[in-house]
Length: 181
Length: 253
Image (cartoon, rainbow over all chains, first blue to last red; front, side, top):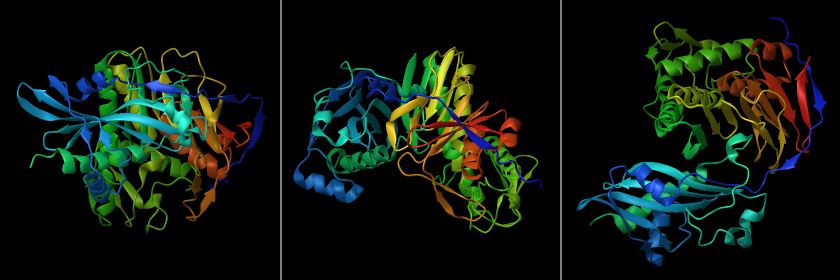
């Protein structure tokens, strides 16, 4: 076989620009509810307050530590029938903070996962409570400062591992706190 | 423009579309289908079925899987094995996997496949096709490092600077090409399929091509072998290298 011509690299003049600390909102809580449960008629807030014992049980079942004592959960009903649960959760990656929603059927099985919003730090700040504090109390639906969208950014290994871990933790939460006994 | 994101293919897949919800749903369905067929962990998927098959036994696969394997084998042949979806050390290489008529595949010697190098690009291509079929005028599919847009886009595609991903540079050229980037964003490496050795990568490689599957596969070849102008020309592709200092280089030769 003919040896491949290796070629060479030519430097180009380009200017590096900071990626604006960007936030992308995909869905509001209400939109996500209807996306995951098109047939749901009533979404009744049923926030779960976890005891320390429940939290350690969840950590044991899922292998993921439960970062908070309260989990925003909605019971989804159609007429008088419970069709499932809608749960909003947040995960923090190395450079990103992601709010997402999980729809569980009444059998506790995952019906779908939707990203509500995605905020990206410009390095380090994600570990800084002040960076996170700017989003405190903000639920999807509030105005977020929209910077550069991830639409035209390549070269990002936006890890979904944290979301996968988060979903596993929520499934354990279902077992511990939601599943009818 | 509606935008949605879901965790799929081991990354966050974001799809934007100037069109209806139906197109968006079809686009995600296409990505979910690729995920189910070609992901390493899906027990019932084609990949797992091929990996369980013994030598000499033909396995019937989905035509999408067949198409991806066809592209992968072509890239292997044209790069003298620098690209290979057969896992090094698994007992076989790309030449041991035969593609038979009728969407069937067969091992000459049994090995194991990992489609991580092309399946994500293919999924992006299928999602773009689904959006267009549903009449979307403009759209963008971004699967963390594999990106493809169509319709009018004013702004260029930007590539993050390895090791400081909060900085980016704009790629010169056609904004409608598919773009794939592989690199050391949060610590990356390329594995040389010919030796099984892992090579640390300091920067990143970006390839622009008419299809995202080809762009995805070519990043690995260029990352291992260097610019490869003949190969790039053959696929109507362009390659760029970006170092950790934010210096961009174009492939030439």
